[in-house]
Image 1 (tube, rainbow, N blue to C red):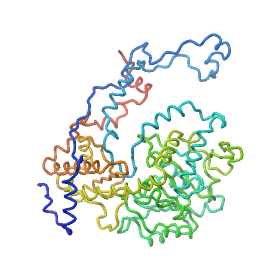
Image 2 (spheres, rainbow, N blue to C red):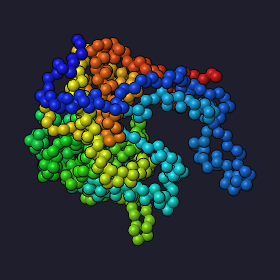
Image 3 (cartoon, one colour):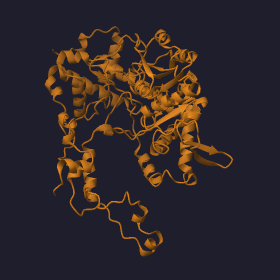
Image 4 (cartoon, rainbow, N blue to C red):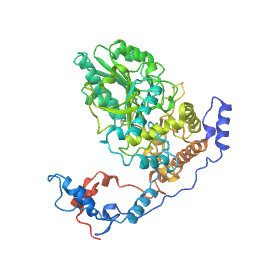
Length: 545
């Protein structure tokens, strides 16, 4: 099938079409650039090194020091002391630096354009890494509070900033992720209902199909029955559907708004009232906060608890499975249940402390008091942005996404999901390549692989299970310029046209990356890879230099 031309696609508004075409033709700097990744035949670190090589050697302690403090081995219990030196790769520092530099050069990610949807990925300033190294690397969580006043002050002040953004009365930074924040809520909910004598009665948590999968998952883990509302004609469930689902069994409502299609439910305040009238609590998953930050507040709408992704929305880095930090906040009546410890401030003594003496707390959900480097970096982000900057970033996020929509609306084979929705999408929009797949056999996975050939990060598709064929969910956020957005749209248009003209070119992508195609069967076979030195030795034997 040949590629449909622009002229073959009917338009209701010729003036709008001319404007959009003019935007595409008149762009500056939006042109897709030539790109080819570096290619290194790089071994794994476990295959490198030789006996006797060292990254650093430590001098013997002076006799006066040894006589005063003794040997380090004396401080170890006999049960944990090794009989032999650990078997580890022995690699000199220059080789290690070169090795990881090569791997970094082969990695695309945020070194170029990345518009990762439902996550609000954004630039993480490298200055923050220097701040972390300089001020946090020597701290230990078991230090006396008197020696942690600076870090405790940062955590306490960030708590206050998030209270202002959400309207909540207190925050905990202990959750390691958004999913753990949802788990904190379900744990807190159980204790709250138990104290009220309603745990046996209120057994159901209501959520929606286009909320994050961690909400029903954590509800199930906590022992609740999950009621999932299906979307109506505007992509969010009707208020009548919620009313039918709520009963004396309802423990809570857990939702994301705007949802994962990018659509905001304007009836959310009515929803909260319905659940409250039935005796339940309401939890606001604000992973998609980028379009409403500084504009609407969870508590003002009526929510009892909410959370933020410090590792996404607040300018922090996020890698696979970490680092991450979820900030969980709640209203005053629920503060007694928060995880321990909380940071307290004594104004009279101008002193910060960690409060572990909280008898009604749900306990700990991770070690110590949270991921402090991310707390510090989120604090820097808030202070750098300021109130006006946060609102501006929210507006730019919505503007950028809607501009991207205008550039993608006539890309062959691409359609917005729920096309009949009349209101604008917020910071992201979910699309479907279903038509293109039917016409060409090129899938959304093929397209995201081909996108990396243009130096652009592979896009986010959607959470599983897919409810639309061949999904694609971009989210420009506030960090990408107009030219970046145009480049992104131009690359997608070029790939779509290529799919109609030369589908095999797209199906066999990537062609310009450091690795043409990952052997997925090898990834699924644990006998063919090792994540630790011990596993490597066990599976592949001693390394010979």
